[in-house]
Image 1 (tube, rainbow over the protein chains, first blue to last red):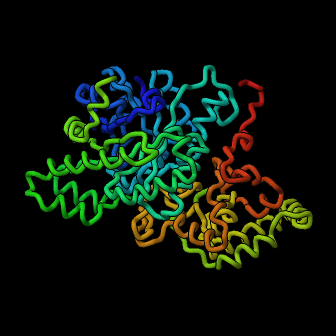
Image 2 (cartoon, rainbow over the protein chains, first blue to last red; image 1 turned 120 degrees about the horizontal axis):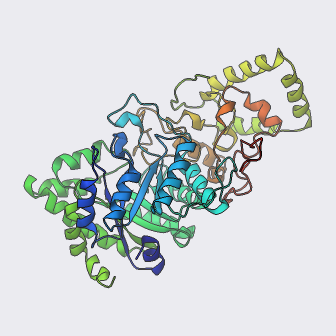
Image 3 (cartoon, each protein chain N blue to C red; image 1 turned 180 degrees about the vertical axis):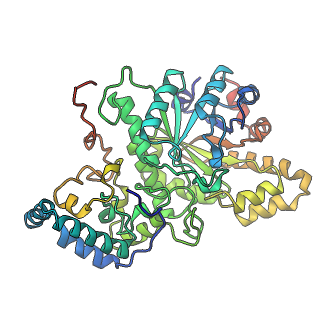
Length: 304
Length: 177
């Protein structure tokens, strides 16, 4: 069942995130896809995540597709202008990659090429609008016709915990107006704050116009925890979560992190309007089966 | 044209005064006539453009994109965002409202929301801003505004999907589509 069909059927969807390798081989993607195939509906392939140069998102997506796992190709606005972005959508669609996740992207300052020129010709809302225009109007931005137009299922991201809190649900509304059909959120560590955002989302009726997948991360070490709290833009780790993960011996942080992720998945799945979860586990994909098993999501998936 | 890199700027013009000036400067026949005269003059046009640049640089940290969004962003310039986002903040805003790239400066969109909301104009931020025309950097946006060339920059009302707003920048001369 495709991600689009899974979401349309109303059953709980699960996606996970993987990073393509820093190297000219698709083998790591193929191996990860084999591990995740029976557990998730689709896998996000990051686009030079954290502004670090890696194998292209479209190539990683194609590798996942060939390994029998549906890809969600991530597309950021950081590295390509509107010509290249439109071209990449056509290429992806022609290769059978249907799901596209649009985001602004981290600034180059945070990656391994801080001296690079930031492009940001379009912003994420404009890119969603452009891709929808290509699909529905059958034309590129210049007005020239596309034969045939691309087929795509468009996704957006949102960070419910970043300021201005009063505007975050409205911003999702803008993305939906522009073309978003599903949204994946940034890490949710503070379920209460997420629930407040969801109530704004429901008040605006956005959950009926767009599938909402809540982002869940599994912390696997104390270093990763500190990095997440101090270095990842826009991520907030509440003190009680931080204390809980620091309270266990260092060699058990990963197990406690997975337990916390499973509890978070369970809590999120009970919130009205949440269509599924997106597991932000790039580099830690082997934790996925354990988390889903403990969260009881596997039982639902057996009927696929 | 080379411009300064985008850095979040705190506006020096109070929000209420800015919205009051907006009413005065709204396009109307007189201003349209004046704009046309200025545009037609080889001397007045650069002088006017330089005056606009100096004024808006001082007040808003303007970088002269030529397609001013200030009337619907609480008079905080979105082109000061290091990602030049015209549709709202990215997901990297710090818990204190700081910019992801310049944490010691406030996110322009956090400030835009506060200023617009303080005057009952928060709904402005829901308007969809369409892709800009990069050929217009350095032009006077006041002249463009008075001549009605900015009308396709953003949608008329919140919730509008912008489908009728698209004006192609490129019309193929040979009709090859």
